[in-house]
Length: 320
Image (tube, rainbow, N blue to C red; front, side, top):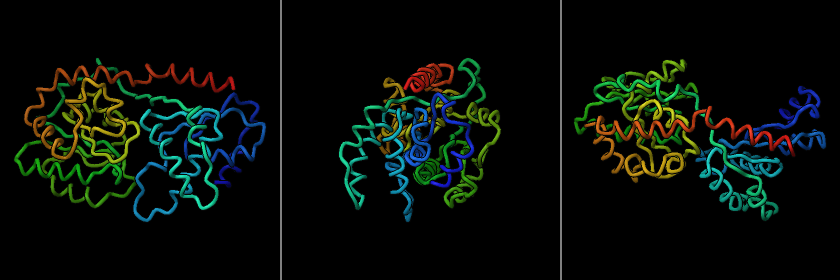
């Protein structure tokens, strides 16, 4: 991290030429500011993820140091921005307990200091306007969409076990397994590729944005079984393009989904998911009217509607 910061300092023009700097949550801002000194312009730290509340893979020993970087970066930044209120609250509530794990001093009031300069800015979504979506392209039988990372924190094991149960019930559906996999296909996906070989119409990451959007248009339902989600870009993309969402009633989902749609599209547990999914697959046309209203509501996350909030935040940053 120190070497990276030194390289950045050596490779950028004089810092006084900048009105502000934007960094992400894993940038070691405290080291950077120590190196550049008083010439450092005001800094905004954007938290899309954090390592304190992120579920850690077994055997990961680097999480504590990364968590400390999250905290110190937020502490020395002039502005701290989170991608959802749920993320902001989860991070700040976890800071005091996390700091108790340190072997040295246990500083007090850190979370309060960060909270005073924190706000929420939802990410913008890049998609065609709602009126350009052609819902008639949906497949028959209905297409179930997975468009999340193939990471353990997305809980794909539960997703596939639910589909196996629906398969055993004799329900008919297609399956599109998209999303990034970092070059390593989890064993569960390999087994699913064999198990659902007659149902899978797309397997693997779709690099073409146009092709990806076409798959979303064909989809009837998008499912999340995530253990961790601070916002939910892939879910919003699928909803705007015409998919019925089935999402856990926790994490960021109750925040990004308007309350009037919670009863229909948030599930309480595995049994509730199976019940809602089986009803959707059996008669997905029944959701057309309410899904159309939801898709229209979710277009509020398109960049053209959120960009002005970023403009105002950057203007405030430059005034520090």
